[in-house]
Image (cartoon, rainbow, N blue to C red; front, side):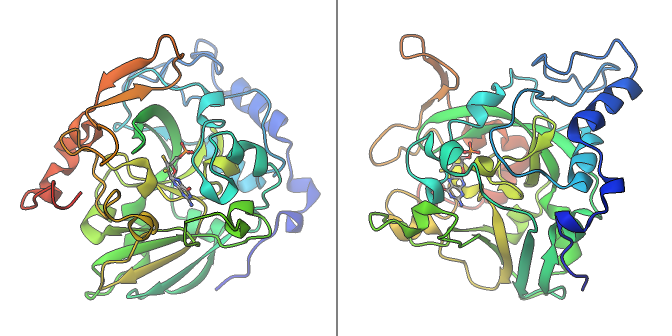
Length: 339
Ligand code: MTE
């Protein structure tokens, strides 16, 4: 196993500033391409197809390693992207659920500003042939990145459309070579109370570290995604940088952020929200307009951004609209019971 490469280990001669990198890239791309700042979603097969880029100020202090910026810079569009209007960058990065940084929607953006995620590594354990601590760079080096524009539906009945950059979880699972005993994948967020004020709060009802899990067949479904970027840039800490899960057919709480551990298990892992309140939050958490949350309806959702006076209410679709790709996974299950 290679050691973990630090940002400071890269000779300064190899470092290009992010601005220079982007301007070079823009130069290399011929004129006529959709403006980098316009929020027009790419159209599949269109010659002008362009990864969505945000070029304003970044709201966090961590400088992403150059290798990551470069990898993100050559991501390609994906056939799985929705053509719906994409949520603006400032909403995606300032309206967050990340309880490790507080429970208000603006807490993560404010309190994760100095979150240090470089170097980053993931500890792999359990029923797999490949185990041990793997540096982020080594995790990513075998994967070409792509942009997937997915709907995100939170269990709280709001939704967004997010242009993630990442790679299929299936590719990572295959590389880690689960044994025949592996039936589930368990994910764990970093536990670091010094950096994450929510983890040292005396008033939290959450048992940290945050844990999520998927059945193996869910994990290798073509839609399950590992994100390392958004809007053509590295993932800000409030969105779960440097590495998070995106499971677009399930409520947002399954999409665990800042993953530090992955393990393969024969038994179903107990997840954070199940532990906190199993009557309200189940293991499966498939988006389902027919199964209400005990305290509110799941039939509709509020698409962000919207104003108090003009909320954009839309009907919620089963599996968040991804039924054609995933409904077969639950063909024999009573989804009212396995919520
Ligand atoms: N992951 C961790 N570690 N901690 C959290 O509090 N919140 C979840 C999920 N992943 C959460 C998490 C919830 S409830 C949602 S809706 C999504 O992250 C929100 O992702 P976003 O803030 O990037 O929109």
